[in-house]
Image (cartoon, rainbow, N blue to C red; front, side):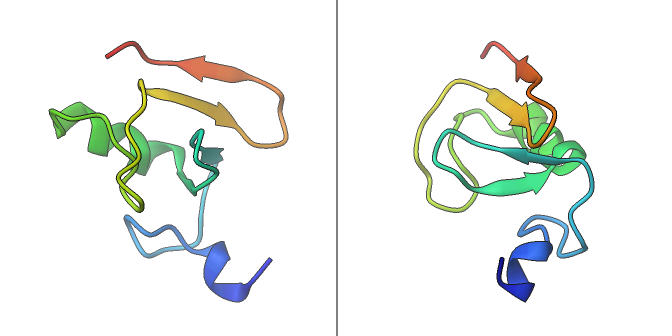
Length: 68
């Protein structure tokens, strides 16, 4: 993992409770939820790939689904 990959592209801090999108980008769980709470279109904040609000917590095997 590159040193820059340790940081969330939304808050620019070290990632906390890392979640990944279907397009394989990772963010802080709280940051991604905040983006989707206010964003009318459900797209990845980095690559703009559209998807339902679906994230899974990395390393835990837990899937978290938020329906758009």
